[in-house]
Structure formats: C-alpha cells, structure tokens
Image (cartoon, rainbow, N blue to C red; front, top):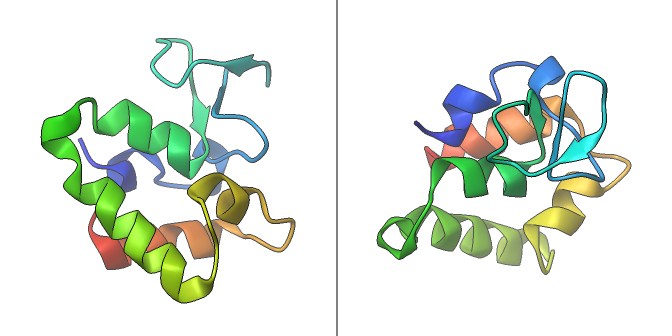
Length: 94
C-alpha cells in the first residue's frame, strides 16, 4: 500500500498527531483503530522497514526545495490543506 491509497480524502488526514481513532484520540499509526493519519504517520504505516527507504528520501528532497526541515512541520503548518497533501503524495508517487 502507498500513502496515496491511505490518504484518499480529507477525512483520512490529520494534523498535530501521527494518527487518530474514530473519536479523534491520538494513537499509533499502525494501530488497527487508526482512521486518520498525518503524512509522517501514513508513511510509517505504509513503509515499514529500511528496504523501503526510497519514499522517505523522496519526501526529504521535496521538503528541501520548499525549505522545510521535516515532514511533521510541513504537515502541521496551519496553512496546509488536504489538497497540498494529495498533491505531494501523487507527485512523489508514494
């Protein structure tokens, strides 16, 4: 599964938490109760080990161009929208 398959619409995305359950409580991204993820949480959920480091490298290179130091800060920026998120995951094919 890719991040784009997980973050299919705005109801699946969150900010200021790696993942949330149906009640909105913070939980671990790989918890089976997770229904919403930030980009980093979705990455952690979809790409589980060192063999899948290429998607993380794509994110890092992309963020360098935008002058952000990490994906959490980019995701949690108050100006960030789901359209930004969707554009990122589709552009990077992650």
